[in-house]
View (cartoon, protein in one colour):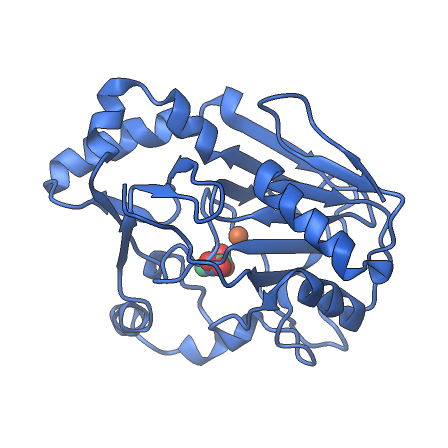
Length: 287
Ligand code: 7UC
Ligand code: FE
């Protein structure tokens, strides 16, 4: 196993000379240590079956089952399928997930500590995932914006990202939305979270799921969030990963935002994700 670290203040440690099927518990411990430090690991040249992929996730932590079945792989509910490619004439998973800045399960009380993505079919032109290091964003935050996020909580709402399913046909939008808001009522997390292991702080909000800061009026929220998101999403904060076939990405979802790149029209795309719990609290000591 060879680990190549990125330059300072950059993301993406590359793991080569490793077939993850051979990962020993000792190596898994070493990788988890790197994961908390580097936050984004890229395993190259992997060739895993679905079961081997799940087995790899189990060496890192405890795989999650996503709350909505329409995303599941039909034989392996641990695998969340993002795909526009039918299998045996059947639609599998959901086409085009997460094409906005977010963290996974941000709109739940317990968001996901780790996320793994293993593309199965790459679009002919290119397939990318973008990342933002929110520890770095917190460090660099101008004082004037920092004043809005210290000692407060942010509100996260998943219902606006609900994907219409075949069962929704002939239903009124207002009823679909009403049901979605019961399924995923808004949650709050500290706007600045502290890492349970490293103790480092990061800003915890995203333009994809975060709808407000506690205690601000609608107008204040609209203005403040616009400025916060503009700062977060600055070009210099964005790291782009361009996939090669065989890549598995594993990242810490506490401290990185991510966003899926667009699939060019008419191109095929299929990716398998597994969410993984490390069984540590998502954050400690609010602010
Ligand atoms: O379809 C999607 O964009 C999935 C999104 C609503 N949830 C991913 C997650 O884990 O939070
Ligand atoms: Fe995501």
